[in-house]
Length: 190
Ligand SMILES: [Ca+2]
Image 1: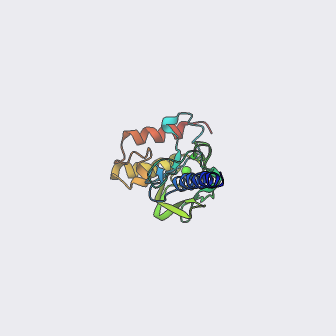
Image 2: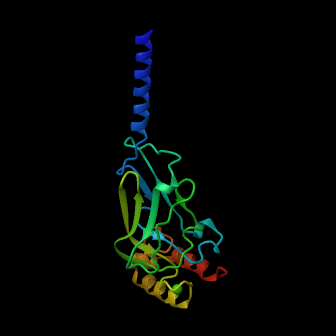
Image 3: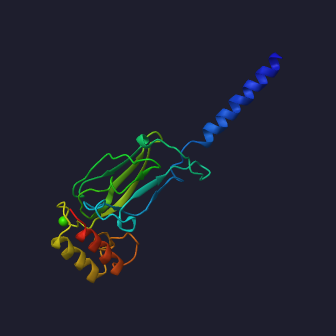
């Protein structure tokens, strides 16, 4: 009987340790989407159409690449760092580890530079960096205005830089989709 209880206890402990090991976040498997660039806009909510709103999501995965559901949003932070205009942070995601349209309803601007965006998974001591920020508020003054259109237009005509021209984060050269994206933010109510 004693041996049986001991065996059961040992078995239970082994099962627990397996579950715990399976639920450890893996820094190499966890991902950010979109992976290359953060988008933000002072009109992100006012646009009112998910097709033209910036969001960012984070997926915590274990070593097997399986998403770990229900991870605490308090354990994940997003920061925009200098020299980007209007750096903010740390900013936690909402449910499902998504920085939704409201969370990214922030003054611009657009900028590039090594490691200007930092995402951290605090408990695992993991850090991810993105190297550019895109915004229809190109100049970062808090409004989407003609001065921003001028900056976008130059990137549109020149075919880059992407952080100023690829407003819809499609990853391609600036095109009519990006112009429409700008238009939506330009015309959205304040
Ligand atoms: Ca502006």
